[in-house]
Image (cartoon, rainbow, N blue to C red; front, side, top):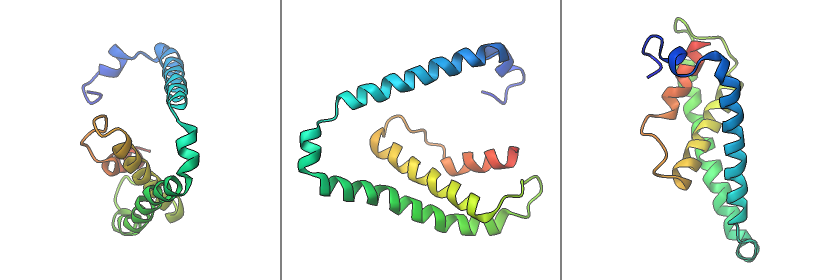
Amino acid sequence: MMRIPGFKDAIFPQASMAGLTLVANLGLIMFLFLVGLEVNMRMFISNWRVALSVGLAGMALPFGLGCAIAYGLYHQFRNDDGIVEISFGVYMLFIGTALSVRGLLESTFPRLTCSRSLLSQSSAVFSQN
């Protein structure tokens, strides 16, 4: 929708962005508060080893795969026109973190994740800067 000329200015004028950001941050804080209320600490404490190992594996495996993928992507596309020059370490950290968060979101909220690849969105972010 943002590719439609004038859409952003008509729906989200620059003057309203500060208010929308405030409301979005308040909504995020309320959501995290409600998630915290639903945490059963007794069950977590009794199963801390399993929870810790599953949590670490769920973040470490996608991060490692993202770092491996970043190596190939960085060397394949770093010399293309319109790409901002960044160091490999920053690119690897970004791609690894993006894939870790994507995996976390898909496992936590499977219906809310969009079908569009986060990797293509991150490439678009780097190419726009």
